[in-house]
Length: 270
Image (cartoon, rainbow, N blue to C red; front, side):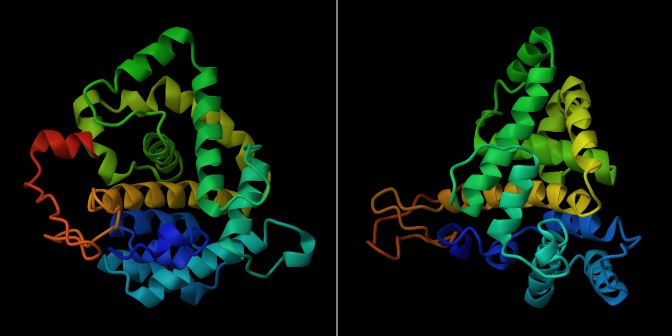
C-alpha cells in the first residue's frame, strides 16, 4: 500500500489513490448529486465521473480529478476572495470544521481536523439520544473488535448515516455489522438525532452540501486506509510494508502471515 497519505494528510490525491471503488462511488455521488449534475460542476466533468462509476474503475488521473473538484467546491464555500478557485484540502477541512463548530488546535493537519469533525458530529448525535438509547447503541457493538468511539468507529457510523441520508444507501464495508445487528443500529435513534444536525448544516449554502459529506467520506476513507496499513506494520521497527510481505523491508523481521478471513472476522472489521 502507498502510505504517502499518512506522511502528508493534506495530500488528498495521495489518499484517493488507495481508496476503494465503493468509497469513490460515494464521493462521485456527492459531487455530481447522484449523477444529476450541479451548476458548479462542468457537464463533461460530471459525465467523466459518472462513467468511472458505471465502469467501476477509477484510473489515477480520475482519482486526481475527483480530489481537484472537491477542492474547487471548497473554494466556493470559504471567503469571497477565494470563490471560484480551489483551496488546499487542509483549508477545506478547516472550513468545514469551523462551519460545524468542531474543536481543534490552530494549525492542525487535515487528519486531526477530520477526527475533530467526526467527534463533533458523533457526540452531538449521541447527546440528542435518551440515556436508554445511548446504552443500547453502545452495547450493540459488543463482540466487535472496534469501539464506536474510536476514530475509525466514529468514521464508520457517521459516514454510513450520512450516505444513507443523502445517497439513499449505506457504505458496503459496514454491511457486516448491519447484517448482524440490523439497520436500526445506525438508522434508529442515532440516525434520527444525526439527521437533525445535518439539516441545520445543509441550510448554510450549496457548497456545504457537497463539502461537508465529502469531508466525512474522506475521513472514513482515511481511517480505513490507516487501519489496513497498520495491519502490515512491522512489530519491531514500525515500518509499514506491503500487505503480503514475508519480511520487513527495513529490518528483515518476519512479518505475520495473515490467514484468510472468516465470515465473523469480515463482519467485525467491516
